[in-house]
Length: 265
Image 1 (cartoon, rainbow, N blue to C red):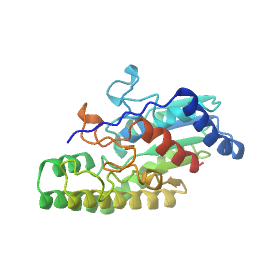
Image 2: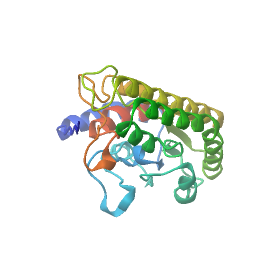
Image 3: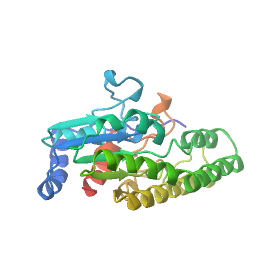
């Protein structure tokens, strides 16, 4: 089953909503030099609108970093998040955006390190048992390998921008279970995928805390808005272009990730 939810809200409503959310954070702390790092969940893949200059990184003006920058007065905004990024590619290709004067950093990364895209593809195309095995493998890598990778990356972020407030954003659960549809996936598969996302978030949250960073958990905001929810979906199911599948759509960034980011400030 293919379903793509595209929500276009009136500009005035969006601006008013974002401003209302942004004002309390701005009143508490004023950040002026912001760098947005990470993978496709930070770059805005899934929103359907991309900056052509960003190429395969597919950075979007509808992604939460862009929405934050559009409603705050910043001296500098370095948006370098890139689709497909891993901890290693963030280290090699994105940390140049950080300086000693950077005072705000956002980052989401880790899903590609444990092969979650491959896991989702496996679960769509194969049996329950093969899907569960793939999730177990990815979860084991998240628990045993990812902590060291994150610790190394977070230490480098702190070294480059020691005075920055760093917000580490996690991943939402993908499905509403039991939900109102199957999207070709059994309840067993959908439950296991959600559990895998929980494992990933638990690992990332601990690594962020160990580094002295703030973990911003989107799972609460996305509750009731996952794939197969009765209400509006804030995540794309299997769709075209295929890379947009299983990523937050425009509403997911406006109403899910942006408030989650603001709550971490």
